[in-house]
Image 1 (cartoon, rainbow, N blue to C red):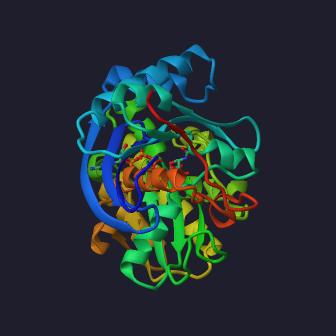
Image 2 (cartoon, rainbow, N blue to C red):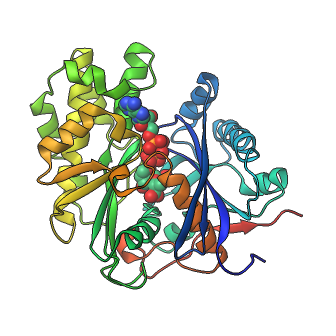
Amino acid sequence: MLKAGPVWALGAMSGTSLDGVDAAMLLTDGTRIHEFGPSAFRPYSPAEQATLRAALGTWPDDPRADAAAEVVENAHAELLSRFDNVDLVGFHGQTLAHDPGGRGTHQAGNGAILAEVLGLPVVWDFRSDDVRLGGQGAPLAPFYHFALARRLGADPVVFLNLGGVGNLTWANPALAEPQLAGALFAFDTGPANAPINDLMQRRLGLPHDQNGALAALGTPDEAVVADFLRHPYFFRMAPKSLDRDAFSALAQAVEPLSDSDAAATLTAAAAAAVTAGLPHLPAVPSLVLATGGGRHNRSLMQALSTRLPCRVAPVEEAGFDGDMLEAQAFAHLAVRVARGLPTSCPGTTGVAAAVGGGQITTPA
Ligand SMILES: Nc1ncnc2c1ncn2[C@@H]1O[C@H](COP(=O)(O)OP(=O)(O)OP(=O)(O)O)[C@@H](O)[C@H]1O
Ligand SMILES: CC(=O)N[C@H]1[C@@H]2OC[C@@H](O2)[C@@H](O)[C@@H]1O[C@H](C)C(=O)O
């Protein structure tokens, strides 16, 4: 049994960009954020990353998925054992495949193993219940965005996560609870860093376009961007979510371009996808707070400023840590699961009614 009141939760996220594991502690009662705690990052080695890459698109019982799960479990055990005074762990795992309307959603990594290794209760498998009940299973960070918005005041706040995939959240903290109608609107916007990382890896053997330097040297091919924006995904009503590699045609379209023009085009496409998402929000915001690794990419931030009809600023402007926000989100969500509070609702995943997903494993 988790003690009453705020607890120190340790959240861990291994994101779609495959760069490594983020972990962060948060003092929360699942509703209010009391304090931000320490955080750490553990990169995947090139060999580990190759194992994860080889498993993308696989489902449980595939040997490639088993190999990926082992990498994920070992990396998390190593990273999470560095933290002290943890009451509860929130373990997202690594998404290998996501097909909410079909085969479901697959996060590699067994939370029960981690619970034994760490000797701590672990909340995991956050997405399956939502998908089983007809939801998209993603995005889940919006319930944490709501708690952040409440810290800032009563006005609506828009968060843009620039991870491997991008996602937007409109949070209205004037409502008392995140699951109330009108409190949250959220959806994946489109590819963000993943296609840029893949290009850099494929052509130059580099993990990403450091600070957007390569894209800054090139010119976007606007015809490719315009064609990309004709994808039916952008015309679908929210909530909606994406698999990491849902836009493989975009990668093919930039193949004939030079390295810098290809990087510039993928960067412009990532920004254009966000612009295409804005009409799905209740109103055009005056400010978008950018979080996730993509906010370090100057070319991407520049492309967003050019293409969006509002100001875009890193989430640090509001006093938050954009590198650890997703890890903190899974700390917060873990406490919500342990307390029986919902983690998704019709406005975030399209599920018919609010759901508290996730399983809890307590070590023997
Ligand atoms: N200095 C930088 N310059 C350019 N890009 C960067 C920089 N730092 C990080 N990034 C990009 O951000 C990515 C990591 O972002 P983040 O950790 O938010 O993604 P993620 O959590 O893996 O993805 P998701 O949110 O989709 O699950 C890197 O893979 C890289 O593409
Ligand atoms: C299925 C899955 O793992 N989706 C991730 C991915 O990365 C960003 C975007 O696509 C978002 O939908 C989600 O992650 C964040 C943490 C979320 O659930 O809010």
